[in-house]
Image (cartoon, rainbow, N blue to C red; front, side, top):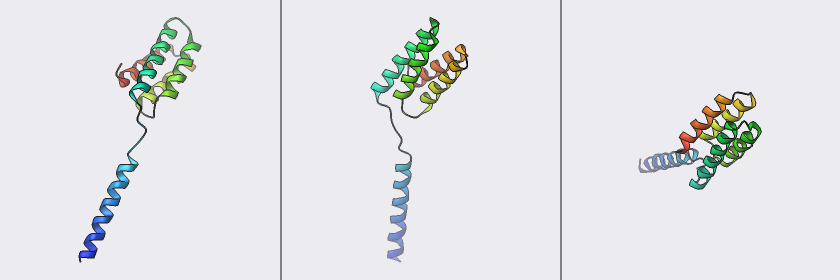
Length: 103
């Protein structure tokens, strides 16, 4: 009976540790987020001045700076919108990403 109890506890502990480890993902540092925010600001300035190629470059840099997550998804969507010629959509996606990053 005691042996069965010990096995049950060991299994519960291992299962719990497995869940904790599986839910750990990459976390962006504050400096990475700050860098990405600056790149997104530059992308918006480029779009405002009509420099779509410059904006795309800034977005690609921001995308490579960010860890996986919703902000990175928004930046990817901004790149897609920009490549499709949807400037307003790209601006909206950039602003959404900045909101997620706390800007």
